[in-house]
Amino acid sequence: MWRWMLRTTGAFVFSSLFLISPASASTHVYVRIGPPARVVEVVPAPRSRGYVWQPGYHSWNGRRYVWVRGRYVRPPYARAAWVQGGWSRAPRGYYWVPGHWVRR
Image (cartoon, rainbow, N blue to C red; front, side, top):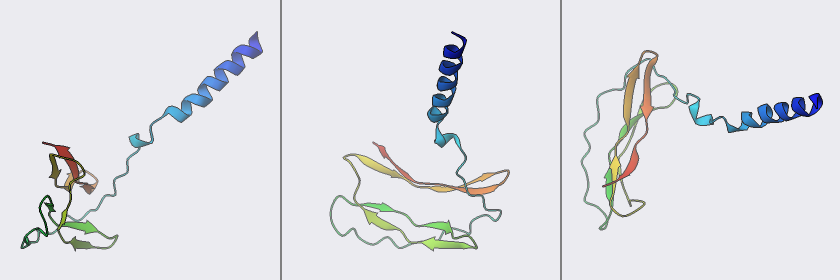
């Protein structure tokens, strides 16, 4: 009886380790220097109907900020709106919050 309880408890503890969400781990890369001022882009006309403009942004390449130009993209589903990403400030520095799609 004692062995059975020990095995069952051990199996439960071992299997519960797989249920811990890896999303709870911090995946932010912190940059001590704030991003430069946003670059003003000239938004070209869309190449066809149904495309949405995703504005450009500053990306950190490990040594410095680089500008990633904006572009037109097709929304992944009907009535989708793009929410622009941006740099957020925390006590450890600045970190990137990626853009995402939301339903309108």
